[in-house]
Length: 210
Image (cartoon, rainbow, N blue to C red; front, side, top):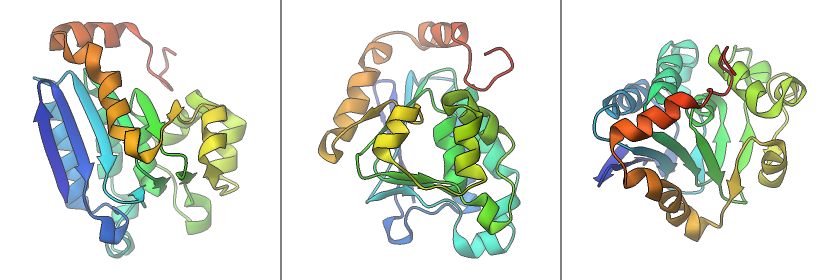
C-alpha cells in the first residue's frame, strides 16, 4: 500500500490504496515515518504522492474507530517528515483530508492538481488535530484561515488554497510528477550534505525560530 522508488537521490513515496481513497492505516503511517527517517542518509529529495483522484482521505475508518484517530503515530510521521534533511515535496494528486494534512504541512513544498480540495473536519468529528498541525498551518496561511479550516470545517478549493499559500503551485494531473521532478533537479545534482546544510539555513514554517 506504500510504494517506494529510489532514483539517483530522489525517493518517490506513493500511497497506493485508491480503492479506500488512500486512507491510512497505522501500519502505513509507521512505514511512512520510517521512510522519512531513513531519508537522512542517501536521499536528497523526498516526494510524497498518491494513486487515484485522492491524495489521502486521512485515517482508515475502521482503525479510526478503534483509536487510530488519536494515536501518536500521526505526530511521529509529521515530525519525521519535518526533520528529514532533504528537500521534501508533497505532490498532491487530489484531495487532502483529515490527519493526512500533517504529512503535507510538514513538507517544504506543496504542489497540487486543480481538482484537489482541502479539509480537516476535526471539529465536526470531535477530535483534536495533531499538535503540530495548527502551528504549521497558521505559519503558512495565518491564524484566521487556519480557524476557518479547523474550527469552521470549511472545504477549501485548490485555487483558494493557492491564493492563501496552503499550496505553492497548481499543476495539471498529467504534469504533476514531471513538475515534482523538475523541482527536485538541482538538489538531486548535489550531495546530501549540501542539501541538508541549505535546508538548515532556512527557518521551518511554524517553528519557534520562524
